[in-house]
Amino acid sequence: MEGGFVNKAAITIKDVAREAKVSVATVSRALNGHENVAEPVRKAVLEVAARLRYTPHAAARSLSSRRTNTVGVVLPDLYGEFFSELMRGIDQVARQRRQHLLVSSYHGDQEQQGAALRAMRGRVDGLLVLSPYAESPDFLTDNLPQALPTVLINTYLPDQDHPVLSIDDHAGAVAMTRHLLEAGHRRIAFISGPDLNFDARERLRGFRDALAAFGDAACGIELPGDFDEASGHRAGQELLAAGALPDAVFAANDMMALGCLYAFAQAGVQVPDDVALAGFDDIPLARFVHPSLTTMQVSIADLGDRAMTRLMQLMDGKTTEGAGDKHTLVPRLVVRDSSRRGSRSSRTESPAGR
Image (cartoon, rainbow, N blue to C red; front, side, top):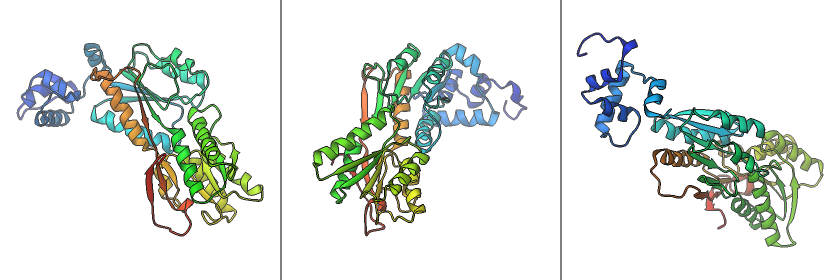
């Protein structure tokens, strides 16, 4: 092909190998992201493939290798910054490993979740699942494709035999509640998440445990929420309608905290001078609102990155850990202006529980 005309519609892996002056096997390894290819060789192969506009035939490659180079991701929703950040972390690793993503959401409907899981069979090489249901976890077990490498993210499954990456929601809620108590707040309102959500239950449990440990001097007020801005706004309006505001409000996630913040702003209530406010997750928007939001930093994108990396290890058979290993990420307390009177620029961080 040196200097000659190339019919781009008929470019094959052999053409790429000939042009790059390497074997077909080397081209295959380079394009599929295998580690046993020298970086200069990989770069040369990728440059030739791009110049010739070579695209591997997905169906033929799947038949020959029995790999689809596709990973399934099943999430309860795609709305909101939490899921956006989680997908960003997953996608970073997927692109590095030249994997495609097949993403499905079931919008809180357990039957749709089962259908989404069953639809992944035969289409993907591995599966990432986030299933927050605290009730009837056996439903997930019954619908997970057998023998398919699977990593669970923040999923409650007592007798699971899949790797799990989770957030220590209880420790995070304890740390935030202690921060508010140590700042002198005694009447603290908590905006909870969905009743059947395991994360929400753990955060509520942490709030209650921290108050109980503090003693009778502290008083907790609990309001329902749904992990979205609208429910946080409704909770803020409910607190305003009660007449006497609490000293502080702790929302079980940042989206609800931002909704509550908007309700207070509409009513002319000053945060933190009239009432302190805190959230959980540290979504990117949390630091850019006014006042900036005190929260528990989860490193959501890192959670996605770690889960995808663990799944690739399973798929490649390169892991020495047990099938049901569990890794827990401990959130970090990030103190910003919404819970602190006086300073408008300082910021402190500490691990949960310290």
